[in-house]
Length: 483
Image 1 (tube, helix red, strand yellow):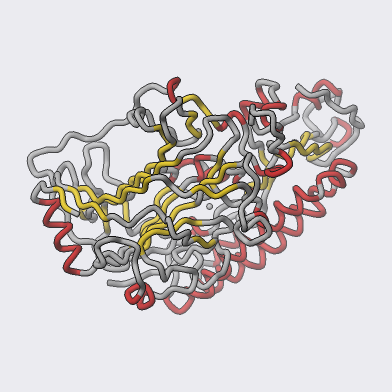
Image 2 (image 1 turned 60 degrees about the vertical axis):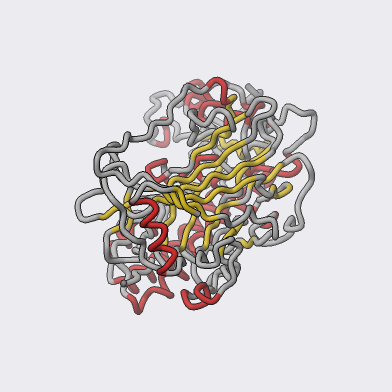
């Protein structure tokens, strides 16, 4: 098998003739608020008179940095260029993180002189990205990367609904609703009250294709615990191999205990596992969930933690279920060893939700699934995260340049795309006992993603023994439930 290597408060009075994009910036607990003041008529603007009323109509709430995802633009990466490209892609993530931190940490200076948003943050970031993208283009033989406008980043709104409603206070106080000021902890990095919704207000929306005559209806469950031993790091060996803190947020791990940024396939094959069946040395990992109103964890000054705007108490799941299921239209074939699958998108808030896939719900309400909201669960109910991984494989590669195109999702009927074959589908269900209050908990994220629930994601590397994979496939294809 080949491996191919690898995004209403009172307004201030403002001068009429300002021509920079950000004319005023105000930082609150839910995000950095930027007032966009476009060019007046005397500077070639479209407003005609350049009146204050026209200018004020252009205002938006802005609170984060939005950069094009370069990794998604890669088609192929030569084997000889893998490590160099991985390093440069990781550099791009670090550049955004550093720029966002500078943006947030200099809120007072930027408010006094809005031009600093460009000179201090966006312009230096563009210069850094131009250099890194050029190196990726050279390494991959894709010079067109330099001409796709990937280097320039912009500021964007964190919570359009809060802005439209004039309910800026909700975004600023993080919606904690519990008498404690969470802004001291989460500063500009979220979440906002509007990121939460009462699960009882959500209509049932979960649908599962009905199995047909050739379906594979069995299941295989691997008991790997719930990370009681606290194996965590901010690495991502799939996306940023060889790079410490490549994720800029903390991951929980179950299964393979040898996993970090520097793990080779041979390291994983030799590693210990938390799974009850020792034939499963697979790596399963996901961003941690934190409670935000109970102080900080031991990583408050560390990479992936407080240094990357991830604060609060890390929560160990009360339950973590790992199950492999079949196809509603066909039998499944064995996964190749060391197959890598990422589901969801850690940058979905800025990338858009095309690759968003994690779901949030509550026990007792799991026929109601959310992708872009955190659930508020009624008394006696717990928060549930569900990851349903891609279940179709191209039959050749264990990875791809963007870590996505070697696998695919089945269609609504459960059929794989042409050229792909059905494999056991990994389904993870992770349960937490967290406060049922808006703003009280959040998933770790890249800092500029503002802890939005849509950025949730899961990662998997298959390290089943051949014997155990054969057993799993047989159980699934013959309609049995095995462990």
